[in-house]
Structures are given as C-alpha cells and as structure tokens.
Length: 259
Image (cartoon, rainbow, N blue to C red; front, side):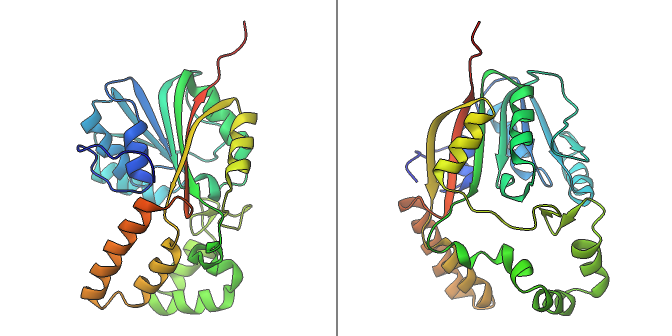
C-alpha cells in the first residue's frame, strides 16, 4: 500500500486506513454506503465531518448500528439504486468492500454520482483479482452449498441458516445480493471502466496485501492457538503494507460537467 498512513489514522494498511486518509476533514455531509453497523462512520467524527450518514440494506445491521451509535444517521434502504437523498447532497462518499456484493453495479454508481457534489470524492474498495482469489471463503457457500449448510447449521442452527441464507428478508444470501450470488473480485481495468461510465474521474489506485487470503484462511483454522495468531496478525500487517494485490482501493472524483 503506497498511501501514507498519518499519525492520527486509527487504522492500519487496510481499506479503513485508506478511506480515512481521503475522507476530507472539516467538510459537509458524508455518506457511507453499505455502512453495516456504522463503526467506520462513527470514527469519522474525529475528522469533524459536518453530517455523518450511513445506509444499508440489512435490517439487522441497521438496528444494531442505531443502538450502538444513536447520534449517527443510519438508514435502512430497500434497494441500492434509488437512494432517499437530493441531488448533490454529499461532499464525499465511501463504499468499502460493498460493490462486489451488488448486482446492479452500474446503476448504483450512477446513483452515487447523482447525490455527490461537483468534484466530490468517492472512495471505493473491493477485493482484488489475483492469484489467490480462489481462496475467498466468501464464495464457499456458492461453490459447496451442501457442505456450507451442514457446517453453518452445526456451528449455529438450522433456523439461523434459513433466515440468513435461504429466506433472508433483505434479499441477500448472507451479505450478497440474491441476484449476484458471487463475491466478485476486480481488476483495475474493470473498476476504472464502471467508474468512468458512471461519471467519475480516477485520481489514484492503491491496494493492500498479496498473501492475505492464504494467511487469513490459515489463521481461521488455528484461531484457538493464540501465540500463532499474534504472529499471523503481524505477518498480515506486513503483507498489507508492502503489497497491493489482494485488495483494490480507488479514490475518484465526480467529473465536471461541460457547460
């Protein structure tokens, strides 16, 4: 990751650290699309952003976020392509590891362009497409649905499995759109193409990690071994700092419209 992490950045060499550096401090409204419970949005209070708004399609996440951070505006939305905001309502927008879960990517990006002010900043992070992409555990449920169901029911319950993966009221399979049904990985060319088509200009690309998925998967299966996990956490941080392939980051700007 080549982006410099400032001393006041509460994160390391990851998507939150990257986004923290580029959300403008002391400005007007900021939107975090796919905010989940709002943890990152809440941290932006330290940057003196005038208004902090988050949206998410998950009813459960929104309820938890409102309970944890009652001072934030966290809004439940039904669909990604029609947002309840006026044109040019936000100075900046983050969409962090969300685009890969969405089926209507082009429509969503055009909607984000609509509600972003002229020359407003859009910060996007997605999984990068590279040699270890096949190790993405997020696609385990699609590659091996029977095995995934058995494991999840064993670890949780059949009722929870049905609610989360079979009949999710928010139109999701876990955290992925029912229509999408795949945790997508992006190369720079594809991300640049869909952002440009939606009316954005690329300012910079960055990324983090190379062995991230390999390290994460090993850590998951030995999570009971505390000393090893600490070593793997240090290794993960070094991997994120010195490489740029496993995750793809982008800072873009709303284009100036010709007069």
